[in-house]
Amino acid sequence: MNSIPLYRAADLRLTEAAAGDQPLMQRAGRAAADLAVSICSARGAAILILAGPGNNGGDAFEAARLLRERFFDCHVIFIGKAMDLPQDAAAAYQRFVEAGGMTHTTVPAIADGPRWSLIIDGLFGIGLKREIVGPYAELIDRANALAARDGCPLLALDCPSGLDADTGKRWGATIRASHTITFIGGKPGLFTADGPDCCGEISIAPLELEAETIQPATGRCIGRALFSTQLKARPRNSHKGSHGNAGILGGARTMVGAALLAARAALRLGSGRVYVGLFDKHAPALDMEQPELMLRTPETLLATELTALACGPGMGTSHEARVLLEKACKLELPLVLDADALNLVAGEGELHVALATRHSPSAPTVLTPHPAEAARLLECGVVTVQADRLGAALELAAHFNALVALKGCGTVVATPDGAWFVNTSGNPGLATAGSGDVLTGMITALLAQGWPVLDALLAAVLLHGCAADRLVAQGCGPVGLTAGELIDSARGCLNAWISGAT
Image (cartoon, rainbow, N blue to C red):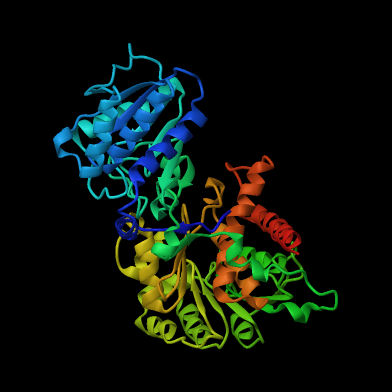
C-alpha cells in the first residue's frame, strides 16, 4: 500500500488554478485514452462515452478524439449545450468536432443496441454536491445496466459520476465503475464510505504536475512508508520487560470475550506482558486458550505498572465502569478508548473534560469509534457521520484532543492538528463481532512497545486490514471470517513487514 497524497476538491481547484497555463485537460484526455486502450485493446471495438456539461465532459471529449485517432468506434452521448460548456471543455468539444466527431443525445435501447467493449463515464467530476436527477440519472442507470449486460469495463474519469469525491457519499444515481482514473492526486471519497464500491481499480494520472510542490496534501492513504522507521528487528539481547506492559480494561458479564480478544491481540502483536482487568465478578481466573494473559480485577489493573492501557471492550456502562474510566483518564500513559468507554464518554461531561485535558506528550489518547459511537460523541445521527466521515473524524480529534480512527469502509484516522489519513486495506470480512476489539488490542500492543502514537495507530489500522486480506487470499472468508482468526494473521503480516524492512 502506497501512502499516496489525498486532496479535497477545494485544494485541487487551487492546484489547477496555479497550473492554469498548462494544458491539463488535454493531458487528462490522453491519460484516459491510454488507460482505455489498455483495458479495451480490440481494434475497432465499440466504445460508449458519456460526456457531461462541465470540465469532466471536456476530459471525455479529449479522450474520445484520441480514441477515434486510434481507430476505435466511439459513440459519444452529450445531452448538454455546447454553448454552455466551460471554456476549456468548449475548446475540447470543438477539437473533437473538427476531427470529425459527432455526438448523440440518446443511448441505443438495451434490447437492440450494440455490444459495448468499454463504457467511459465523463458526466460529472469532483465538484458534485447535489442529487443527480432527470436525464443524467437515467444515463447513469443505463451505463451501469449496459456494462452489466455486456460484461465490459466501465471507466470513470476523475471520479464516478454521482459520488462525492470529498466524502464518498453517493448523490442518488451513481456510476459503478470497474476502473477509475483520477487526475493530479487522490481524493478521499474514492477510498472511504461508498467510494470503494463505486470506483473499482483506481489509478492516478499526475498530468505532469508535482502537486505537492504546488499545494501540500493534508491527507494521505495509509502506507508502510509512514511508519517504516518502527519496523525494526528485535535485539537478541532482550527480555519481556523490553517490550512493554499492555493493559486491557473491560469484560463485563456476558462480554468477557471482547476483553480477551483485545488482550490476545495485544500479546501476539508483541507486548511483553498483557494484564486484563475484568469487570465480571464470575470471570475465570485463567484464559485457558491464552494462559499467558494475567487476569486481574479492574482496580488491580489500574494499580499495575503499565506502558499502555485500553479501556472499553465489553466494559459495560455501569457506575463502576464510569468511575474507573475517569481514573484511567488521569493515568500518565498512552490510553486507547473503544466501545463502551466511548459510550460512557458520550454521556458524561466530566469525562469529556478529563479527556480533553490530557495534554502530556507521554499520555496521548486514541479513540476508535465505529459510526454509531462517533454519532453519540458528536450528538448527531449515524447518517450525518457517514455523509462526511472525514469531517466527523477531524471534529472528534479536535474536540477531544485525541487521535481518532473512525472505523468502517476506508477507516479514517485524524489528528488534533488537522492531519488525516484513509486506510485502503481490508475487506467485508472485518464486518464481524469482535473485529474492533482485536484492533484495540493491536494499537495497545504497539503503544506498549514504545511506538509513537501516530505510527502505532496507522500501523495497527493498516495491519488490521492486511490481516483480513491475507486470510481471504488463503481462502478464509470474507464470509464467515472471525475476529479471532485475524490475530495470528496480523502477527504474520507484522513479522513479514519487519523482515522486509531489515
